[in-house]
Amino acid sequence: MGKELSQKAMSIIKKMQQNELTESVIYEEIAKYAKGEENKKTLLRLGAEEKAHYEIWKSYTGMEMKPQKGKVLKYKLLARIFGFTFAVKLMENGEENAQDEYALLFEEVEESRHIKVQEEEHEKALLEILDEERLQYVGSMVLGMNDALVELTGSLAGFTFAMQNTRLIALSGLIMGISATFSMASSEFLAAKSEGRDDAFKSCTYTGIAYLITVALLILPYLLFDNTQYMTALFAMLAIVILIIAGFTYYISVAKGEKFKPKFLEMSIISISVAVVSFFVGILAKKFLGVDL
Image (cartoon, rainbow, N blue to C red; front, top):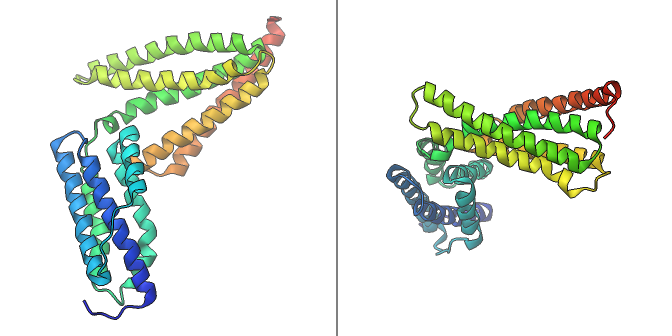
């Protein structure tokens, strides 16, 4: 275009040009296996807009670039594992870090204002209309996971001092956990049916799977440690609880645009408090009932 740009501005433009091209390819790749025609159209439209931004930046640099294969692979894998909504929203969240760079370009590159507005408003509006099945059942998954965390954390903490044997604790937790999984899933099914919902089976399946996975992860330390290392297993179990809460809360905060910290603190405090109370219940039960396992 023949415009004289500062070295700093040119450096930023090259970086943005590379990012826009890479993200356009990511959208196109994810659209290939995203379910639902509207979702595919939305993702392809986002990809086309990123490509248009790339062409604008190319008019300043005069450079042809290739997409970053590592970044493309990363987001394709995230989309496969956690869903395309999570992957693309995580990618767009990363663009918020570019706001300061846009501010530096405003004085030298007029198009940067238009691109910034489109990035902030139009693309976010398009992302909001993505409709992914797994996100429709996040409520069921949260229900199953929350119930398992609170109920099983408390039970395992109580069993830990009452039994003082990792294998007995794991056996008791497994029996209780599997029974509770079927109970929770059937309750969700009946609740959905009573509301006249056609997705009752899917809803209870998501609830049951979330509950069962949580049960397996919480019992795992009691299977890995020696019989006498019940306290070590207890602390490992509590660490897993925190990691599960952090991971799932982060997923929800990205996919549904909710705040991470308040929900994480709330769930963590409830689960750990229940575990502490149950642990002391186990101490009292062992003392007053005179049971020695």
